[in-house]
Amino acid sequence: MDYIPTLIDTMKKQAAAHPDHVLFRFADFDDDTNEWVLEDHTYREIYHKSLETAYMLRKKGLQPGDRAIIFSMQDFGTICAVYGCMMAGVVFTIIPPPLDEDKVERFISVLKSCKPRALISNYTLEQGADTHITGRLLKEAALDTLRLKRIYTDRLIPYRREDVIVPATADQLVYLQYTSGSTSAPKGARVTWKNLMKNLEQCFHCLDLSSATLASWVPYFHNLGLVVTICMPILANVATGSAVYFLQTLKFLERPKLWLKLISDFQITLTVGPGSAYDACTRIFSEEEAAQYSLSQVTHFMNGSEFISAKTVDRFIEMFHCDPNAMAPGYGVSENVCLATFAPQDYRCLKLDYEAYRSNRAVIAPDAAHVKEIVSVGAPVKDLTLVIGNPKTKKFIPNCASARYSSPATA
Image (cartoon, rainbow, N blue to C red; front, side):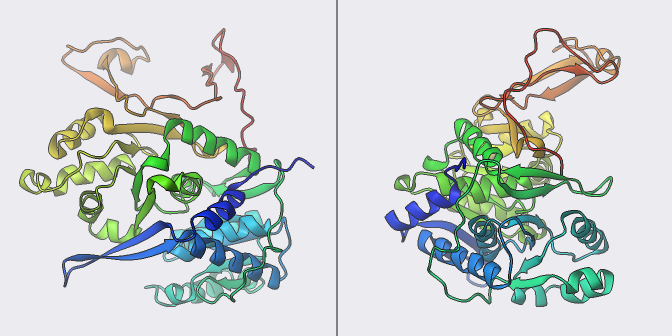
């Protein structure tokens, strides 16, 4: 069979060679002491807890190819649930916990689509949620929910044997990445090991995390959160002291300033966020406050998943005294796993005549009274060729080669 080296193979080697290296740090800010409280996790802990998750999947009767839903609780257990499913060959999908009506509907839609046998969550966090998750599920999707095997990442059984690890093949399905479902029912992309490992190779060609510290609050159920903040760090070279700092998503939404404080206090070199996050920072900080934060060491402010405003970028760079080329816009699609284009250390903005733009014409007009500023999202990632086509005629522009990379199929 066509076996392929995966994240799990690398994790096993890293746990053996660097068991005490801290890879993941969960940060919370204590207002009483005015200090950060860090929850550190080493390669040894990551590997062991992932094995325990894989064992629990086996104990509950799941076999390779079966499917499981993981509630993104934004904790260490969620990360190890991802790795545990990979080890066991169980196809997973991560979705937000159903804390409101929209997310309950999303859960039911995904449930019907992927037909899982298990639901993985954190019991303590689930019970402490503002809206009782289990109660809502039983009310809204009683029969389907009751059939699911429940696995809790904070109630695992110690297990160290590696007999739960399934060798991976290139075309083996790893996970389903669902759309947000904001405009229609969530749709899933099928991601195989070949797809995932190729996109990780493409990501590392753009950005090597081996010499970086990364700060993120991006939800794990977003493909940026899954690929860049959970999967990529495992492949980084630990000799340079790489680490990932996680700030709870809800903490960021409540107090966005903590994101930049985390970057400043720990001299983070790389971070990720959508355009709205950078825009929020230009609005909630005064000039005096911004001057107190040290962000000049950041080499990459990854900016994607939303419209990128040139005015927001200019304002952010000016307020926090950053190198303009540190702003690193990109474009990602689930059909290419995550990253499709990226502009590392190469920030560019094109100014077009606005009236011509409204008529679907591109006219360079830097001095026009009314301009449309378009931020470049960079060049295609390694081994990916983009083609331009007319959606009406279904024809491609001549001399454009088709994509050389086989992307995931729609679920």
